[in-house]
Length: 482
Image (cartoon, rainbow, N blue to C red):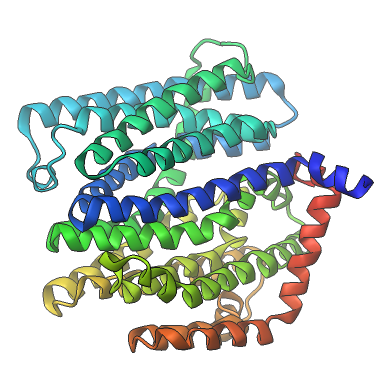
């Protein structure tokens, strides 16, 4: 009974339970929305989400810089207060630029927007973008203070509203109300963050503090925008060069594929400040042990979830006739997205060591490779839309290897290409991964149980480590606190 009480009162378990419930709702919603909108309207909705993603990542690194600076100054409350409010001022300036973009669109127009018929939606898109910028910053401030209830509300409210709308509405009406839900949900979340009273007392604008945020944020911005553009650029190129219906199928595949890894991102989201804190300093032996320990659980679990999903995907698609032929796209998107998890640990290490410039260079180089290959596949080889994602597989592979190589070099480790590649992509994961890719390309979808079995056989120790870490989180929830 005491153990049950401890589990029920555990803040991590409570947060993760609500997040996983929300992700399940999002997963079901994505299927219902895809069915009720159909490929064409889903293509329009996917393009709207693409725009919102662009507004989200073009934040000049303010939120990421604020997060890291507060962690690095966690003992100085006055400094934290100054950082927090100057970040809010900078976000307000960013939102002025978004309004100017709206004015430009109203005056000059943008041809691609007309293809997706979003002129009637664009004002609401801008409203959502503005409020999201504030909410993301406030979410980071609350996360550092381990205020998981407000985080839960922010991350759950909009998906829950959209779920009920998807049950009740369909067609163009559903499309309209999905955007209304985002506007309403963001307004309510702003109110919740304000009422939570975790925002420090207001201080005046400080040019020196603002400059420190911008200086740190600039390279974090180059890093984050380049990293996120690796996948978003492929979605953008598909939206430009392929029909709206195929954009809809790709958006459907991406939404379902990304939802699989959201189960892990819920945990990494709340432990990120603690990870950054542990990866600071010069004790590289301890840091490398920490990185290896983190990667053993996180990366292994990510691949396991994807192999499990690929096993069930054919049966899921049989229940959705309009998307029955989307298996190859859905599977390739999943196998692509999971690749970047291999960089986990080393990317965070470079941030904690104030190596934003190197991180930015790595992600920018990977983005350029992605764009060159994607354009070649589309314009030269004229491949089907679902094969364009191969460019991103190559880009994520390069990104991961460079993160591991540079991270190990910073620790003074020069072990050669083969060892660095093995550290980037453990053979115990590569074997079932390559087999899964072959099965997908040949559409042997009912043999996907074989990669899963291979994964289990080759990863018994990491799986046991994952179970041990789950037990630790249950018994000691305060380990995530700064």
